[in-house]
Amino acid sequence: MSQSAATPSSTLFDQVRFVLNETSHPGNVGSAARAIKTMGFGQLVLAAPRAGADVLRDPEAVALASGADDVLANARVVPDLDTALQGVSWAVALSARSREYGPPNAEPRESAAMAVQHAGQGEVVAFVFGSERTGLANADVERCNALVHIPANPVYSSLNLSQAVQLIAYEVRMACLARERGEVSHVASAASAALVAQAPQAHEALATRDDVEGMLVHLERALVDLDFLDPDNPKKLMTRLRRLFAKSHLEREEVNILRGIAKHILERKVRR
Image 1: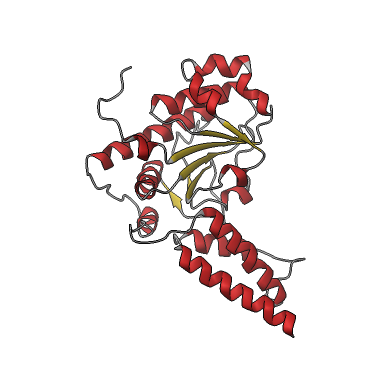
Image 2: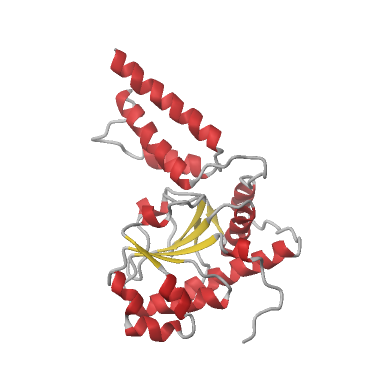
């Protein structure tokens, strides 16, 4: 099938990353490469694939890439999800189930529109997919800014991994095309209204996901030193704080302020 003559700018396209976390089947890696290439994307990152780095040369992966050999060959294999998300400012977790704790929920179309808004400001955005058998762990979901569930048939909602990748890649492509035409996306839910409130402004120096992760580690140490956080019985404190910060796209200056507070807490404890 021929693609639309209107193609998003390569700069915008290059800001979108597709991350497969702990993928088991080589065929799904090849199919995912084909799925994103048909939509015009090229960034595929494999975090800790079960088959190791050799998955990129697996005959099944190569066969199912079917013309997307370049995407497959250029895919990066990294040891964990944190490494896969390095340099990413805004990440979306894809999950077949809701979570009691975690980032705000959004529909696929809404998350795509939000991601393209961030990408349009020069940020790198990522869509994260879990393993075929277990999906994403809670800790992985908490590393993201939004949680998306594909509203499939509740009677039979099982989607193949590469099918989920194809669906999201399509939505992101449509959002890219809409931005190129200067169209404004309409928000369809209260949940995504909260996400749109995070829309980056051109003048802001936005914090990357790496900046926020570093701040959270620093803040956690300070809270332990204050005896506010019991490391042996942390409950859900850091999880709730992650959710709090996921709701607001922090500026780098705001992250620096929070790290400054944590630094002074730690220094005061040492002086005492």
